[in-house]
Image (tube, rainbow, N blue to C red; front, side):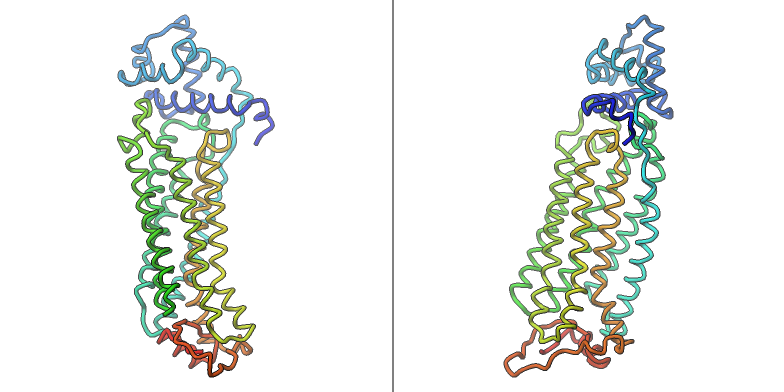
Length: 405
């Protein structure tokens, strides 16, 4: 935050941001201009009109829709208040902070997409070469990958179209309107990408164990995720009528607190992240493994903990960057954390198969990671894909999905 921002308290910043929004939406004639420049035109207009005007004057001079002009004046607190606020903003323009957007979305998308693409390719090759076939959860993961890449591509477009400035007063209405539209698309697609990622993991865990309570856990986690996805999809669509609320701001089209709904959906996804990460952990204790192999297994499945952390940072970004402040009127950091969250979750989903592939081709990398000898009382039918043995054992385990310890 710049030093000049210290001259403005939170309430003043909120007034300036809100006024920037109303001025942008209420001045279609100058929608291509920076909002502060439009405010200067209002100041000049007020002075030329001897500080009096009518709704019709707004339509004539700024292109305000006749139905919006009275509402515009009302949102600004009446004619006198509107004149006072806009003149005051123009006077303090030199002292306003001008935060810039971090250009982090594009490099994040490129780097993580490359990593995830390699992981998905290795996973599919592992399933084909080691396991002998590509299963249903592999196809779901592939669909999740395509959805994640599509979401990231839209986020890149969002970053480019948003420009370098973060505060409303530095943006044109054309830019801000496009920002609203793309944010809506991203919010609608996000739940489905998360559903595919989590369901692919739940199906994988369900098929690799015969333990009843873990299977019920998989079903419960998938069910909660599906319900949360439905809520996360329909709330943005039906919370505002019409759906393109950015073209009808003066009509107060949104009756539901979309910010609170987004926070609730994000919080539930974190809970399902934790559940998804915890589900395979008991399976590791069911195997008679050496200490080193147990550590490796924990590390393989423990990548999910990183996904939980990324989800937490994304939720924190949603809380911070969906409320008015000079630093938070841009939502690009939400896009950045979402890209991280999705790709790490996919990397987590690919880790066991990649590990199996490494064990299959280069078993000498882990010469001391063999399982400890089994006892007569330790034989179980727990179906766990674990390939930390010799090369033939790795192939047999991944193929059948069974390991009897």
